[in-house]
Image 1 (tube, rainbow, N blue to C red):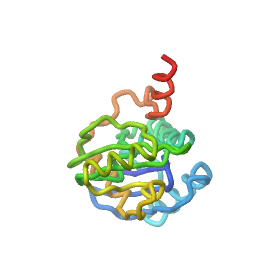
Image 2 (cartoon, rainbow, N blue to C red):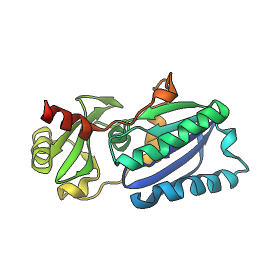
Image 3 (cartoon, one colour):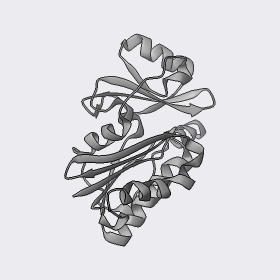
Image 4 (cartoon, helix red, strand yellow):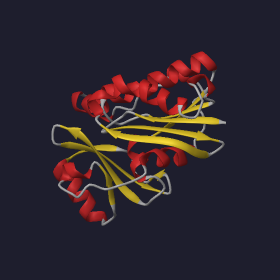
Length: 200
């Protein structure tokens, strides 16, 4: 079983290659502006380093959002194409949950315009609906719960946190079922939902 992890949803380009549940290589590269340009070349190079190719993939594991409108779609498009080409299955993980992994933590991602995406997790399970908050609301939310915070914490003025993002995505995927209809798969855009609420 060859599994490929791809995260292009936010500040990093994350790639992981797993064979029979063992990581054989990974990459985590800062630079969200270049993901559409660099993802395929970086992935192909990692695979070639181990005498593998994209057609060998049995499974694509991607982040579904929330995040950058363009970024989320990069990994999702690659996964859909791979499904069409060789029938590999697709699993999706929340971009927010990816930072928290299997820990009991609050996760935040910069949503621009002085707002952040926020999620709360424990052992890979969401304890609340992922939501959009202003920076002040997020700070109050974090203070009230007194839990560790991960993700793009610098946007809140907190010290940046470290996590093994690629492996967190893979470990979370182990409890996920493959997407039943990959052609209908769409990114999660919390901002879009909030905009619709405002208009109603």
